[in-house]
Image 1: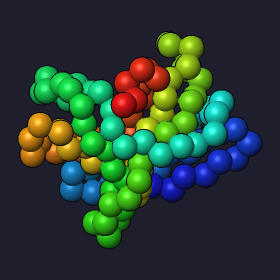
Image 2: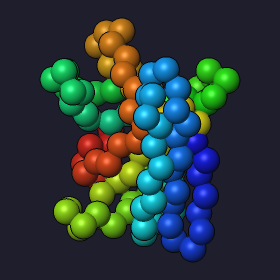
Image 3: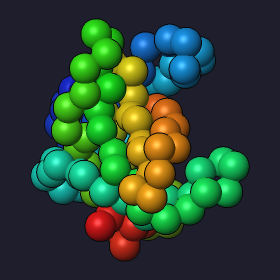
Image 4: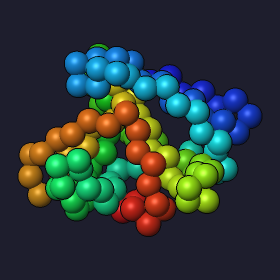
Length: 113
């Protein structure tokens, strides 16, 4: 992912790769300062909910800190954008080894743990 702040816009660009074959390119209007995100309340597509550890996934396979920022959301007023590396995000459920990939997350502020 390349992350660029230009003015108050955040550009999230996730490269195509085997886990996220479509990649992703999105732009969000940021309204706050970026911060690190370590855990989120989330429900995966297969219905597993709870607390997930969240990491940035880099193109070389290493992991780093995921970032978050408050953004304007036309459907919710404001939301928290969670974004990561060139290969997006990896979420690991705290109660087990389940791991999922997402290009980014757009969550209610209360979903941050």
